[in-house]
Image 1 (cartoon, helix red, strand yellow):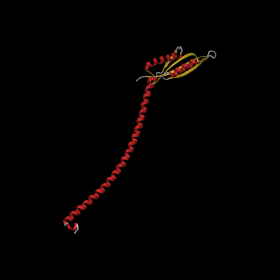
Image 2: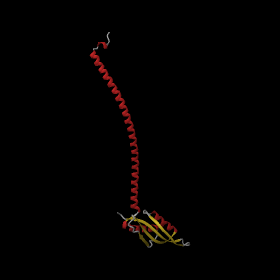
Image 3: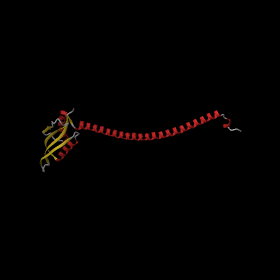
Image 4: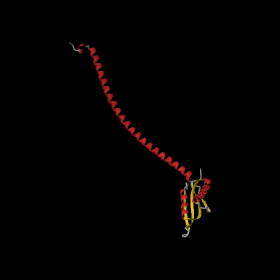
Length: 188
């Protein structure tokens, strides 16, 4: 039985060799292309991992900055609340300071003594000082009650000065000269 290659003509053999050669070239190109794309995909995968790492870092920094922003916003809200509730505002605040001091005397069960008021007029400062000086004669338990009412008052007050003028050991009465300070600001 004759072989298949013996039955082919020279022209058919040349065509078959050309097709085989073209197939081998295409197969080689396919293998080279597959290696190239495999190498390229590995590089892209490494690059994607590096970029993902950067995105994770940026997300962590963003969350950190958002937490910091929220903290600053809470601080700003706290400061606004303190400014609103702890300080006196403008010229009307001076009258409110006087009324508050009168209420502290009432809550302490003490009569309102003559009070000398001083106001700081320095326009450069945002917060200015209000001072009230007065003399009182009271027992130690009433002094404690008065000091408690001053400290418990919702606005920021300072007990600026205490001058003991007379201490009566027999009756337990104390004559004092006190200076209480509060703060006010001009609304802008």
